Length: 373
Image 1 (cartoon, rainbow, N blue to C red):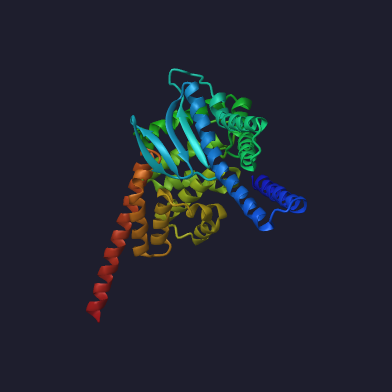
Image 2 (tube, rainbow, N blue to C red):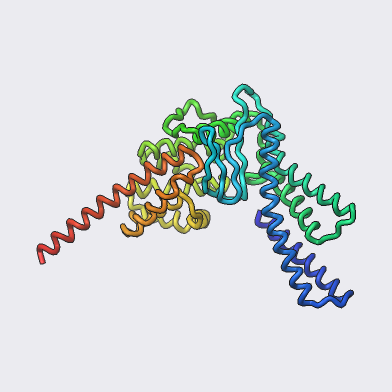
């Protein structure tokens, strides 16, 4: 991904540099004005890139509706519209490596739902709008911004079809090559719907989770089932068992997709802290992990919770811990699902209780010292 984006950036800069040089040599246009126009072109690429993310997710929405799917949530950047119990609400969260997401639920009556159009719909929308732009060019449109719109549309569509990481193309490839992954894919959609509409992690039994024995536990769909189990143990405050489930994923985290790497790092550290293992080597390794450090920069419920835990158990700073707890509690309504909201509320109450107990102990200790003095 980085190589693709770096190559694209170099190509864009080279094209704009060639364009400036050509006009500077062949016309009498002022160089300053050319530089201003070049800046406007770069801005247009960023604006159209964001616009094509919206178009892409709208494509999934339309394709899903055509395929008989029901709306669950629609996210652009950090903001999402969630349909919860037949009502709509706003949520705020982000997923690494994604600019948006349109999650939909296939019909329960369909035991083998169609998936190709739903997954391909985003790129198809980008291609269609780019072709429409090309039609304007053929009709005489020669605006450089129109070219920018077309190029960003084609690039967004193609990038999402390249089979790597969590792109639509990779999901399509995996579902096509291994039919055993299709039930896991639909299970993930249906569990997401359940978690949005009131089911908690503790209600999910092991026999209900579909695992693919032909794939390692770090494979995306298999890892999802383990993360559900981890959340179930966290919800029950069984931190020791949650730690046992998380450790194998932590040891093989480099083989997982980036969003799951972040989840595993967060849960592994949280379990270590709540168990008060005092394993500073593990704590330091997680804190220095580049993926985890990037995760901590996001402003959302789970990061506030883990920062509260770190402030209490690592930094021993009760005031800072309470500040992060307060931020997290204010963000509970922005959780993407009911299950996530309930889980984080329970874990925040656990941390808050620990902080309160420690504050009482410190106050009592200070009172004793003052009496001695």
